[in-house]
Length: 336
Ligand code: BDR
Ligand code: CA
Image (cartoon, rainbow, N blue to C red; front, side):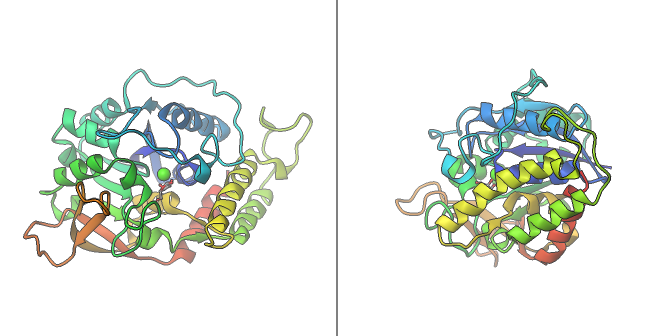
């Protein structure tokens, strides 16, 4: 099975990305790094632990990341993801414990223990990974592959006119990470899912209905502490209930910004690509981020034509079939 380390700022769509990985038989989740972004790190970590409990996943190490970006104060976005980062859903306090190591140390220890075998999947700001690189500069060679959700390539931002959220929160971290991959061979180049592709991954209420219907067609699951006393109904599948409450908030957020009653599945798409890069059509480019500027700080720039004279350090996803992705998401997460 493919070993995966996830680095997340959970986050409604991060939650779905995590569920996707947990539901995928070919994946072995070996650790979860919690990063500050959508909500502060302690809340992210609590959400990760609670999600693992919700799906009765085996014990998987969840580590706390840095409380703030490398060089600037933390900005969070509760209006996008809800007060706790999970929309209208609520979790009981987790009973599982956090790891004793930091998220950066978790990265380093795992890639050293399994050289070349781990896919890193980052769906939040890259702070932890940048800190890990400072501890272990050989990380790009030790990692099997890196898959990142972030940036916006020849496409408007979702946070400022030019900035995608994950990069906006910690542009210095993005810069350090992509500088470290400058000399990566073609098969180790980070796969980057920017807004140019993830905004084509539109979830509509019909997708959730299909997912719930699939879950309800399965044999009744055992009743857990998340179910109302006495229930044994299939509709009480706690994962479906969680998703319904979480994603409704995300639908309402997108409608508020005139994007329609839909939700962009940025992070679950990156999760799907991490397990099956064949889902994505890519183009090699050299990417970097604007760290100065008065209007464009945090903007990601792709040099597609080699004008900077630097080797490509990213494979940017430029095409996919969203219907194939949604079939897979529904099939997998609907089977919890
Ligand atoms: C990214 O920003 C976050 O709010 C989402 O979880 C996703 O990772 C999209 O710009
Ligand atoms: Ca995220």
